[in-house]
Image (cartoon, rainbow, N blue to C red; front, top):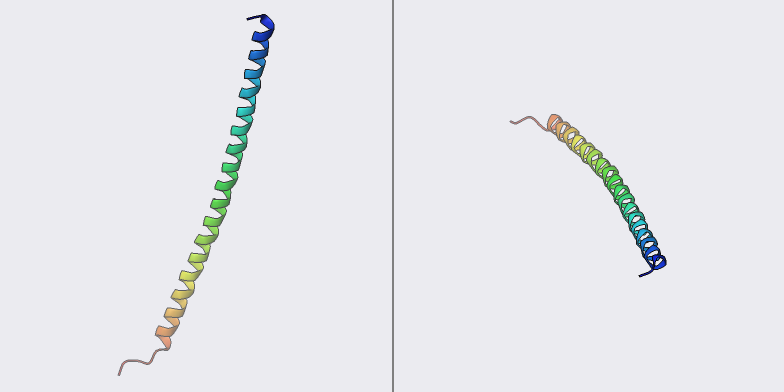
Length: 71
């Protein structure tokens, strides 16, 4: 094996490792974006649930107050 073929092999291995590192970085970035989107959606869902619970409590209290007293 000549030194040129060894150098070619080393350079191609380094390029393959660099390409794999770039792919892994892109996958990590995509996963981070997905996690951030899930965080936002979870926060929105929690606020919607809180608003629904408050509205249900207000409506239940109002209907209890306006109900006819027991005879």
